[in-house]
Image 1 (cartoon, helix red, strand yellow):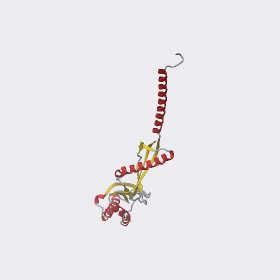
Image 2 (image 1 turned 135 degrees about the horizontal axis):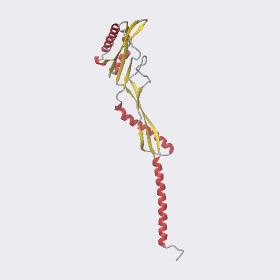
Image 3 (image 1 turned 180 degrees about the vertical axis):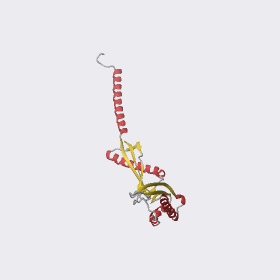
Image 4 (image 1 turned 90 degrees about the vertical axis):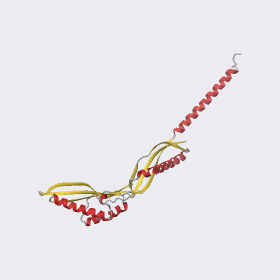
Length: 236
């Protein structure tokens, strides 16, 4: 009869409507899941560690001026002998001290020629305690007649960074996750996996803010290693 739908048509319409409703729900739920999966927070993690330097380098610069080159050179040779004796008496091997530069200049003072010979030697040692002792006794060089020029200072270096890198990166990552969890707690979310990460760079500075290498500036073997990581965590 006209005006009445057949049972088969009614069933088909119901199925189609149900399918559209289910499809719309699944699409909407999928979009929500995609939106949640795209949520992330960017945080930084810090790790610091105090270390002791394992390499000491002391560059000593000294000079002599005279009216003739041979006299100036003889004076510098005398200072070199005194410097080597100083370090030998402290127990350093002879090869710990090496010449690293020499310079000769000439100028006239009221028409009188003068020659300046400048010498540079460098102590390089892994014996940190002995190096510290040498610094404490450096005035003995002055008593021997050696005048240290500006720039003559002991520098300490930490060379074993690769040995502590993995643990420090792990500590910085842990610190970053703690910051992310705090953020997630405030926003009612949970921290998921790492989306991306940047390690950053390691810095090694004097623990107490000193810097070495210059006259009147004392470096120390006590250093602070620092690394900052930047990490994106998914939020769920």
